[in-house]
Image (cartoon, rainbow, N blue to C red; front, side):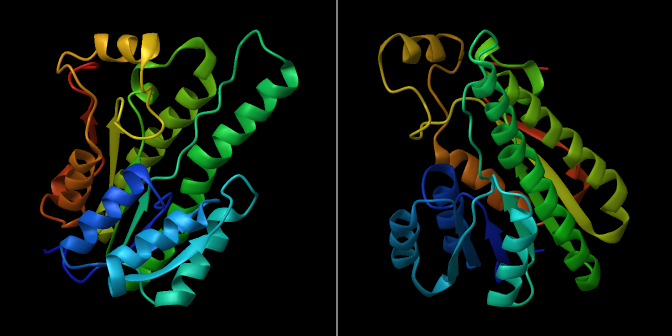
Length: 249
């Protein structure tokens, strides 16, 4: 099975890892639909860079109820059949244990909405489409935090990412016999805008990575493209760690 000529919806594709995944998919001969939350100029710039392989840019605030279904329906309306879904969009607002209770509640709500509920809703829609088509692939970008936990101020983020890992495994077990494949990728620090750029925070981040550096977005993009190719269907349900040996299990 080749990755070529697939239509792939990628969430959070305006910059960082999402943009790297979109670029890799296009380089391998596919069409992509770019989702963005708020950064329209970045999404449009990427569309201009990648050219006609981009079927369009779709905006949706994944914090809002029903966002996943709205996005999937808009993507189908835009392109017709979709072969694969990459749930990449993510946020990590702090949920300080000893902070203001209203801010803590909002952080939990936002983390769950964007990092778990929206991708689960998108997956739900995708499964219906893929069943009608007879095949499909879902890749969920999770996090090392979902496996080992995170610092006390990012409890909500870790919980949501742990949830998306369980969701991926559940779908894989249920749907493998229908030729619907589901994978999770769990990066540690990635060298994007979301990573620390200097000072004590960067030093601390690097100190726990035996490889000595953060992952390059292209590394995750390359693995994503490989999984989208369908070259190893027996790996469905697996979580792929990309963390420089900072969490080995």
